[in-house]
Structure formats: structure tokens, C-alpha cells
Image 1 (cartoon, rainbow, N blue to C red):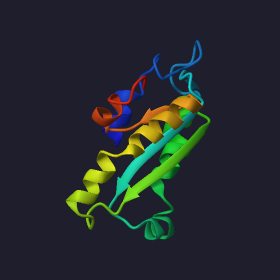
Image 2: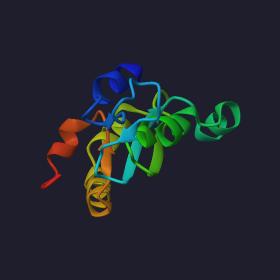
Image 3: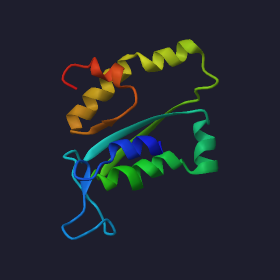
Image 4: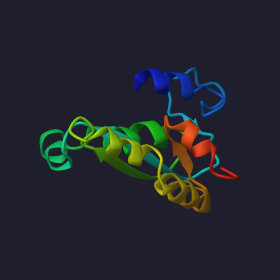
Length: 127
């Protein structure tokens, strides 16, 4: 995830520092969207994830990554358990009407779509 963050979060595109601030201050987010939906897959059952880890990915998206860009409201969804599901089940996750519903909802909210599944979402008209 760090590689993705380093590639996507760019100064003067996603955020900026105020004039005279050399990076030690608080960044000002530059994204127009105020709502984002973050989707992740996991190999840990959701109940164990929350008890054992407190859902660290949700904390990263909601408290670190997206607020840094100026996004105030973040909805996080976790899909899994990937390792124990059949190939057919994973295929249904990948290519389903869910992408269309998510894309439509994100578009309606003016939200940013955070995904590595670009190929599937590109087929949604206007998204």
C-alpha cells in the first residue's frame, strides 16, 4: 500500500503546503471530492480483523490517507476471506453488478473511487 500512496499522493496535485511551509506543517487537501469509498480484500475473517487488529486499513484510509487529501468522509468496505473462497467466488466478486452499483453510488455522492480494479470500473459509463 505504501507504494500506491507514494505514487498517488503528489504535492500540488493531491495536497499542498501553504506558502512558506517547507513540509513541516499540516497539508491542505486539494481533491474536490469530499466523500470516498475505499475497498480492500482480506484473508482475515472480518470478526478476527476487528478484534485482533482493530481494522488497521480502515484506520489508514479514514484517519491518514484520505483526510490528508481533503476528503472528510470515508466509507471502507472489506471483501474476504479471499484465500478460502473458490476461484468462481473470487470471479463473481471481480466481475459483478456490484462494480456498477458502487460506481453509481460513488458518482452520485461525488466520491473518489479508490481501487486497483481499474479495468472493471472503466466499463461503467461516465465513471
